[in-house]
Image (tube, rainbow, N blue to C red; front, side):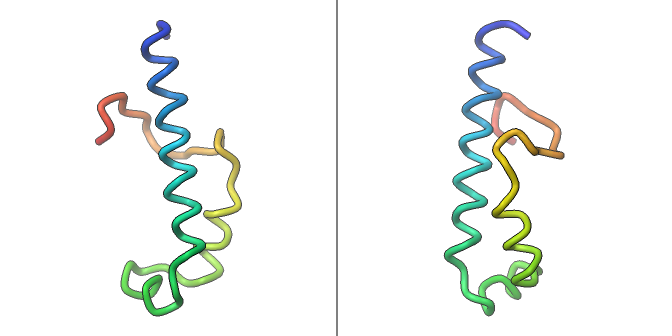
Length: 61
């Protein structure tokens, strides 16, 4: 992994963390709308920045 890919990976981690923090702000009704239970959202929000079981894509999609 070159420096640009490493930086992109780090920035992607910050994006994941912002998304997880946003889950904490959603109401139970909003969570239901996106197909999550409150316990699932809480578990996801608590995951550390390096715990990503998604395939990294440097272009953000």
